[in-house]
Image 1: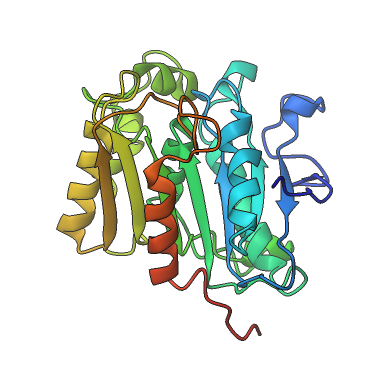
Image 2 (image 1 turned 180 degrees about the horizontal axis):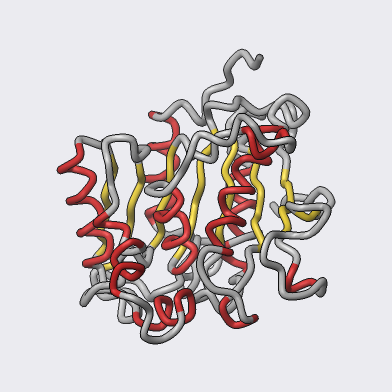
Length: 280
């Protein structure tokens, strides 16, 4: 069943920092998909679609929202700025951080628990998600903007065949589109997120396929190893078969879902995202 989205809105009503214009491509937005109140759990997911930092793949955006809303989770699909439209880091991270701050700041209005806000990203969207879980902050208490006072730390992350590293096992196309060609070594290392994990990194569900021919499975293995070293809990699933960009079911028989979906739902239940709670 497809979820009915609420009105898409800009993350910065007065214009995003570093905007190159005021066309739709210059305006990062968030689109809410809210569950039926009868099944709402109070948890939320902010969704970062993949697309190599060149586009937003709909099946990894609204497609995920359609599914997770049926599990009672409020979903928010982020349209972040793209390298193909002239943007470079840190604009995408600014958009992702602002999206989480926005959801947390409006938790009461959307009937969301502010400590059960996760993120999910696929491919390059997974790189953006892994960047946020390793480069978050507590907010600026002195900002005149109440949204900027909120923390942008996700409470958990789901990383789907994610680009993680910009090293030898990484995805050169995503790196060059995000940072530009011949980016400084220090910046490349700073955004090789397996090198940036700390004990404060939130718990993660990580999945990949062994035969992914676009983004190597080593990206997920390196990140899981870094989480383990830092003492951060995670669920890691490596499936033998599956094309890159599967989403929920791409390339599978009509009506079927990839096994990661059930595994992720099980994990979300363990994390308390599928259990209704008393909201503030």
